[in-house]
Length: 200
Image (cartoon, rainbow, N blue to C red; front, side):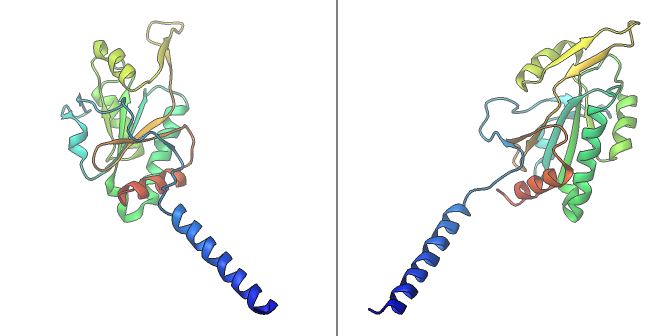
């Protein structure tokens, strides 16, 4: 075999190896958020929404659910997280109706159904707030590995809440799949939701 044929054979072998490597790699889904598929926590809830209807994950079959814990008097983290979620829904275009935003209040003492309904409407009329009974909130937060703590203010009603700032993402079959960190970007969240809607 002359040198020209040898080089051609080596080049073809390199192309085949590269193609094989690409095929091996394309079977793995790469999410922007933290993949927690199979986690033994954050598996579900049964809570009334701001309209008084009892809700579980089954109500949202066929949709990707993004669930955030916060409170309406939060000065920055909560509103920016909800704005990001609303923008992700907009970026999904025609698939946006298959993204359900949920907000679980960590401050049921002050967050009344009326306040929560108005709060959700400010971001997206399709988003829902869920209201845990105050006595059940510690167990719910533990189930979702959510940290929260009341920080007393100058008056009994002017307290703030320190709390975790990420969101849980459930696939259309109601399985917890991802944990998104605060301010991860609406474009990245939309991309992850699109993958889940495709059955990844």
